[in-house]
Length: 233
Image (tube, rainbow, N blue to C red):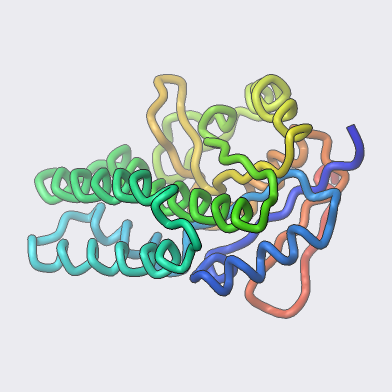
């Protein structure tokens, strides 16, 4: 396999349809980019965290509507939105159910499960933007390889397990086109979703780059420029 570059884009870089297209331009400008790691669209994580704290119905519905509006503003600008509409609707329904559960009783595990939906939605939308450009892109659930402990909210990755799982499940996919996956989230040994804490998407990109023996990881932000590092340092 030739050189592998991992690119990570933060929330403002996938905040809306235009931002996602600018990020897609960056990805496609470098043929060595094989893996793209995304945060949730800007604003989504804060809304999900608020829902996880347990809200009264009125405020809960307001947050849910805000999440739907942000994601549907991207979805409806796709040429073929119906391709992923059902999946986005399913994730939004999951958020509603989890938010109702949080209103009855909150827990760190429930919070992580709820908050993870931001990255799941942003990556689905980004994959479809790429596919509409006739780019061979595939969605990958990072929880299949990002094994962590059960310290919900600030989970610690098992680097050895990550390396083994990435070699088996992720590396072979890099031969078949671009792979788009989530930052910030993982799973513990029982399969429950965990999060790495704020800033976890950058950490995810660095960990995956190391596990895949990537030559470079690029961290793109909303400021002019780019931060590049060797994952082995």
